[in-house]
Length: 446
Image (cartoon, rainbow, N blue to C red; front, side):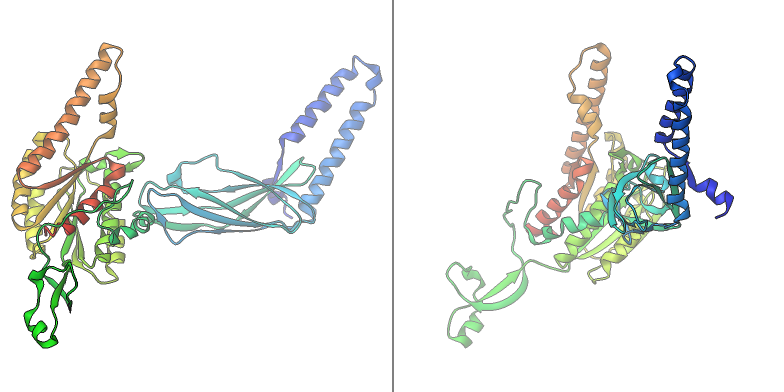
């Protein structure tokens, strides 16, 4: 073993420092108590022998542990993702191990360490969870394990070059969580409820025999004459309707709530909506915009559409300029020829901000069914409900209440313009958007 390698791998423990402190104290007491004449030297000699033995166990035997990190192909943004590490002890005695994984810089975790104890030849599977809050590439570094023998006076560091990159995609774990929503009529976090249909679906499914309770208006008289018994036409909900999620990437979507930006909440909700729409056999498309034209994906219901949406959402970033809704109108008119459901994820912080964009939203609503999803500022709502004890608190509560009230006025303005809207807390935007989509489908409003 090279001397430099020995220096970089050898570390002394707190136990050794503690015993050295006792040794120093014995030498000091030796000047006052003659009975301790040889005891300090005996203690120091025993300590040196123990340290040499510890060094022999760790370095001369030289049994490097087997360790390997197991990472998923990709992480889900905003969710808990599991990382597994296998560690096997090859020493002929039990060891104490401290595992330090070099986490990606995005986690900003400088004190990550896992302590465990391994018997001779034992292999352990160690797992921990990480929660990324940014999309992009996450680079894992070296695996470090510090091994101590039973004496615990020295420890040896082993390094395993296990560098790896894991991409963080929009929340596909949440997409799987809500997959069953596609089969429900309406979903809420506390339960389900049915919604009465308005109108009549005209998508033919089959001709079947009449049973009591069928609508007599659907009797097929030609089939009845041929069959010799009452036959009725059966209809089903219309399919292959176009659903587009339109994502605003302007400066207002940069606001953070619970470590995620509003853009990330919109992206996660769009991915879940894509999965739900495809399960309901609708065509799903995607458009993004800010002060200039962004990405676009034509509506389709092929099996590869979900993966295309996932790859497209992976690279979306917020700009720091105000979004151009006039550009959105002209681009949507050029790309989307068929009447569709447009779900626009955006944010309005003031009534004047809405009034600047309302003319373009009204124009879009002439050709498509428009649903505007914007975000409630939960921090301001909490401030507006706080108890006050001084004049400054009264001022803050009044201003917060003004902004909260203005959000409600924005909802009213959109309703007066004949535009559907959702004002949602960021963490509930996925559930609320899916509920509204299924409600629209159930009412056959597209």
